[in-house]
Length: 203
Image (tube, rainbow, N blue to C red; front, side, top):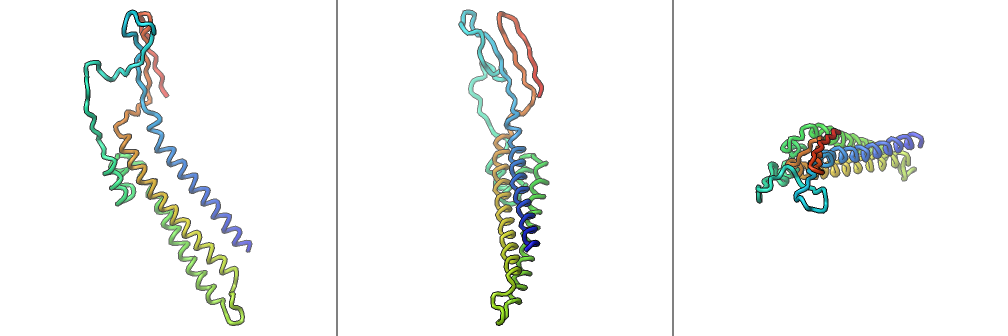
């Protein structure tokens, strides 16, 4: 029973590690959206305007008119690529560093599924052999180990499905954010009393 307790403790640590990895992964892929460049101009458009400051985007010309925006990456195409081959959508979005992360996590989960399934089969057969007319219930420790590895195998199958879904969601979101400017340089120009003060903040 002590060995079973140690195995269950290791299983709990693996579950905690998985959820921690998923949290870190989602946090990392959402960072570019949070670091999007904010570049505003503070200016006084009219001489007699009561408020001294007004917000406006300095990247848009007053005479530019309506401009049709075309996305460089197709989110549905990115999702389709990742659905066929996990990581292919990330390659399409040019997020190359995510490919080895997805491959490593997927490979680990697949390895655990195969390993736990083999152990399940082994202890299943041992438990079946331990059942005799004199002892129809068999060796209960072998039965517990059989059930434990069956649960472990099923858990890693669920983890693989979650990773596959995260892979699809990431491909879609990454394609949506591809055209966003994620420069970390923020410049603010203040026009007040006909004097311009330039402030630059680098993060």
